[in-house]
Amino acid sequence: MRIRYIRRPHAGLSGKVYLLDLDNTLHLASSHILPEINRQMTRYLETHLELDTQKASELRTQYWLRYGATLLGMMRHHQTDPHHFLANTHVFPELKMLSSRHGSVPHRLRGLNGVRIMLTNAPRAYAVALCKELGLYRHLHAVVAIEDMVVHQAWRPKPAGILWPNLKSKLKGRKALLVDDTLGHLKQASRHGIQTSWITFPGLGFKPLGLTGRVKHRIRQFEAIRTAKF
Image (cartoon, rainbow, N blue to C red; front, side, top):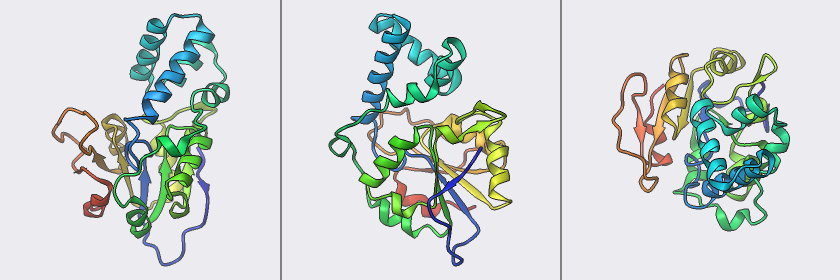
């Protein structure tokens, strides 16, 4: 597990750490980008597993539900090279036309008084390119992409339980808040003493589930993150 710093936090920042998801947290991904990623993953399974489109789509979903990432299912059951998979399932030559920032996210991101770390199951090349396109990259202190979430030589992206204590050890005792649109990620993080904020802004089509258990803070737009106390 490694944290790749883009720039070192300056001395005036608080000791808090904001762990920020990317897709559907810092930008709107459901309308264009995520459906396209799903299509690319389905095509990858069609080609490399010799499946028809329906079977490939069903298997992609099955692996995502079971392991938290389709990639993990492909690695476990088909010995897929993770770097080859990621390079061929996040291809966006026209990223500017597909991406859509919601609200005044760069301004709010810059105003967070703490260390700002992106924590995403997306590959680094895609995450960095998208953040630069949206004007977010210069306000982050570090990017932790799926390639960085390796624990004991095994890929362990969100929501893997073993990820969180390893991440906390890198934060050296600083208080952390995870902001994510996926409830399962938040629940696992909270079990390891990380505070959580569930972003469920309108238009995503998610069911209006109430807060339960350890996840006690919910926001409908990123600008409201300032109301989270940790």
